Structure formats: C-alpha cells, structure tokens
Image (cartoon, rainbow, N blue to C red; front, side):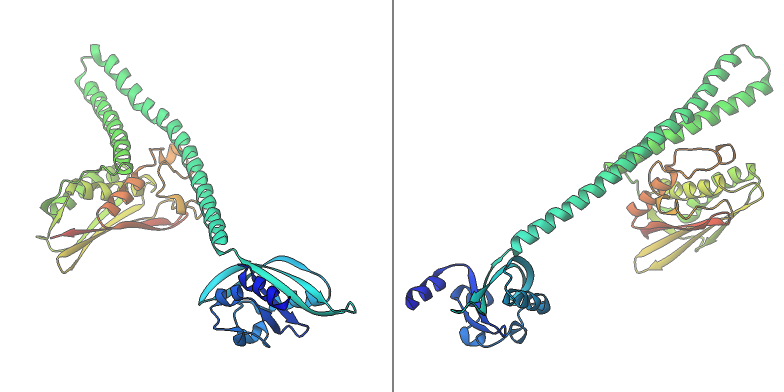
Length: 372
C-alpha cells in the first residue's frame, strides 16, 4: 500500500508536500522537487520554508501554516516563491492531518503554478489602463476640437465678412485714401485667413508625418533678419519694447529649412506679443553652440505679459488648447501656433520648453540641431 501511494504521489503532476506540527517538511513528491530544481528530498526534509529560503514572503505562508495546524483548511492562497532562480506565482491549498485520536499531527498541501496566468492578467490590466487613458485623451482631444471648431467658426467669419463687405462697398468709391485703407484691411484679413489655413495644413501634415523640409545652406543672419522684420513691426503696433540679440558669428551658416526655422521663432514671438500688454517688453535671443559637425540653435523668447496659469501650463503645447483669457484684450486665435512650433522643433532634432508664472510673464526656449 505504501509503495502504491508513493508511486501515485510521484506520478501526479501536482506539487504535494506534508509537514509536522513544527512546520518542518516530512515529505514531498517528485513534482515538488522538480519544480524547485532540488536534487533530492534531503534538501527539504526536516527543514522549515524559512530555512530553505524559497519563499519571497515566508511570513505569509508561516501564518497560513499555523492557521491550518489549528484546524482550518485553506484553499488557493496566492503567493510568490523562487523556483530555479525565477519568481513564480502560486496558489496553495492546505489541510490538517489528524491522528488516530483526532489530534492534529501535521498538515498536507499542494500548489499550482499560475505565473503565466498572472502575467496574462497583468498584461490585460495594463492594456485596459492604456485603453482607458487613450479614451480619456481622445475624449479630451474631441472636446478641444469642438471648442476649436466653435472658435474657428467665429475666427473665419470675421475676416471673410470684412473681405466680402469691404469689397462690395468699395466698388463705387473714388476716394483713394479710403480705398487704400480698406484695401489694407482686406489684405490683413486675407493674410489672417491664410495663416489659419497654413496652421491647419501644417498640423495635418505633422500628424500624417508628411511634413516636407526644404534644406539649404544659408546664413543664420539672413534668417534672423527676416524674423526681426516680421516681429518688430507687429510689436511696434502694440507699443511693445522689442529687442533681438544675436549670439553667433555674423558669417555663420546652417544647413536647414529657413522657412521652418523662422516659423518656430515667429510663432513663439507672436504668442509673446499677443499676451503682453502695451508698454511691456518682448526679448528674443538667438544663440548657436557648435559641437563637432553639428550646430545647436537656441531661440529664447521672454516677455513680461500675463503669464500662464499653473493648471494650464502642462497643456500649453496641446493642439487647439487655449487658456481662458479676455478675448477683447488678447484676441482668440487658433491655439495651434505653439503646438506647431514644438512639433517643428522636434522634427529638427530639438524641442521647446517653457517657464511661466501668472501675471509675471513667460520664457519659451526652443532648440534645434543642424549640420554646418
């Protein structure tokens, strides 16, 4: 009978063990030894699990043993053990062993390995979290998109109405000065419409990774002159103190797309101008650091405008996002300028960061890396 029982225990695939009342192993089957990679019973018999050291948290199973030895069976208790140098997840069941007089003389237990199931569950949980995060982000983007479309309806309507009405009214006007003024307003409105259209097209191209760069070797001073010409005139109309500092050699050349570099700088500067009150300042600095065959261009735009609220700051580069500001004072716009600037900077092996405090101003720093 003992031989038959031994043969059954050593044939089954379940890992089985039994202990005495001191929690020392009295016997284990072959599946148990194989699972842990033990050479034989001598490694285990007469020892506690703490002495063997194959449990990550032996106190959990020690308390479980004492519970069983007091007369309460346990079923499918989860735990972590070390088998063949690897963490494995198990479910352990134990029952008391009773003597002839009904007293408890030990316990018998078995366990199954659920490591793969645990990993699968963790993977499913991780995927669910990612899905939930993605859905939340998509919902947030949709909300921003709806707000953006609502703003764009008004933004596009204003210049379109201006162009339409001025073009119609001016058909029969002979006053040259009035015509010149109205034509200037028509030009400004059409230019603004073009800017909105270009922003949308750029964003679409970036999302489809179809943005095209027309690289050429060009003097940085030429790019900077263009930036200064555009920005200085706009700053002047708002009565801002505008300055641009060049920290690079006058003859320095870059292998880059000059239009895209200007776009990054102008978008940052326009943001600073828009959110700085009359009488304030906007300071721009362009600096180049050369390392081996690469040149790192840094553009810093600092202002003493209204600044950015701490709650909104993490969203400042999100598409279509705009902080709630007085539209009569700061305008509305598309909320795409900084998004596009950051994505362009990243496409040119750099990035844009921001430091800001509400009511004290902001400092945006863009970096881009080019060949010589």
